[in-house]
Length: 429
Image (cartoon, rainbow, N blue to C red):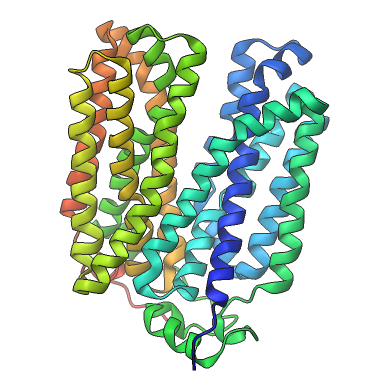
């Protein structure tokens, strides 16, 4: 009997959610100047309006994972989709104050998406395919971010910014209705999964496969928080995400001020590292799973590959310091972004490998750390510029973040799960 392919539809549904979430969150950037002129805002007010998404998004990762674990992914993910769609509709109707509140609401609504989706993958995707699934998921996130600017610009010109945000509410609600009706929390519950597919999935789902519906084992916070493995997983994500955010925030300004690139050209050139991130995520997931299939080693397929990827990114970033041609700089930085993206699926896969019964919780802590890094590094750039008067320090700091990420990966002990390595040992039911 050939296994059915229901797991692939599940993954496609998760990837669609990722694309829609990143499309709605990033749409405001392309419409910013129009909104600012229409509402009579200052640039500082626009900056606050855009940034108010990220802090609640980072801080609500753990609560979002908890909601997913209590409700089950079948109910939680559609709920998240409906809520962030309502937030988008609220942006369409809002004044400045209302739009700030809606950005906060959107951040809260999307916070549980990644950890809950990782929990779904841990249940639905065989272990040897989890990095590839994570790579596809991360790739679709980036695709949503990449297409947000041109699609939103076209909608703003065609029907106005308010209608653009209103229209963005529709796909998320339609997705939520479909997903809730079609999806099931476990393969064994889905009528479209045959015995061969269940046999293919269940040996690779690790400790999560023996959880019964409605079972909610208490989160061993003392063990998780006292685990060096958890520290290194969070730290590598903090530094890697801080490095990534440079490309989507200050990179265009760096090209303009340090390399004399015109504004329009800098915007186009900034897209190249973002596309490299999409390709790197897909390639990294496939490569990591290939190494796992060939060797059976989590150390080689997740840890060693990540150390090599982060180190290569750091070397390429440092080498950009010595380049003079703008095109070569962008190519080198894009190649570095590609290498860093290769390690991204490994980060998600390691949470599934080491999360035990608590994959969403472990993933939420890692993702929260990454988002805090992404929020803090853009604030550090002006400080470095003020202290040194040169973009060279920023570029070197950008590369140093990947050195730190590689070091954290190297220090991670990948045997067992996060709780096994806890400094505080507690027995829990």
